[in-house]
Image 1: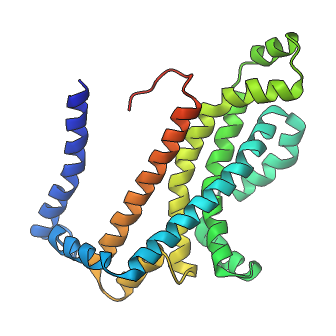
Image 2: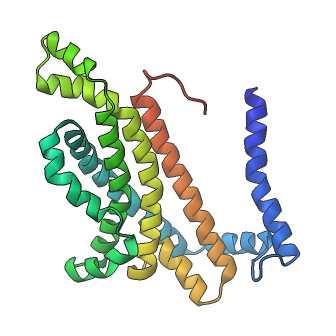
Length: 251
């Protein structure tokens, strides 16, 4: 059964270049480079320092922004989820900020923040922050009321109840939000780099478009997709380690 699933997964991956070849070979999508052209461009990019610098810069920006977002959103979400007064004071304002798209933040951050790097990282931070926050709130609210009461009846104080009952009960939802947040962090990063950054994979991809180097555009897209998938996989591994006490889920 497991080998069959692996074959299905492999077939799903291989279907992409096959469909891509068909679409480019028969002109189904105008201007689409062929897989061979993109492969040649990819090999050429691997020998360029700019490609590796852009890849490293984008990765550092995402990881740093994601860690800060999780460090802020998780405790904030737990407090909002468990304390009504705190939720009334903070959650409505956060809900007003959440629907604002990253592009709309770029002019504001350029004016307010002193450096373009801070602007890019702030916008990336927002991409990860809100999914983690909302899932943490729902996870904290989803903990059965009997569990904290049982802990308190056994002598646990408020901190112990929060640390050993509320937080573990919310962890599955928290990690679901972290997986979504990692993906949106990459989305926001690339948008910010295209508009406000002079470096990074987003800028590299946009520069390829403006110069008419269409195979390099696909190189940038593939690289972003690979890094995003690896980042999400690392978050899933962290979740599997932290919530190993839950029922195993299929891989």
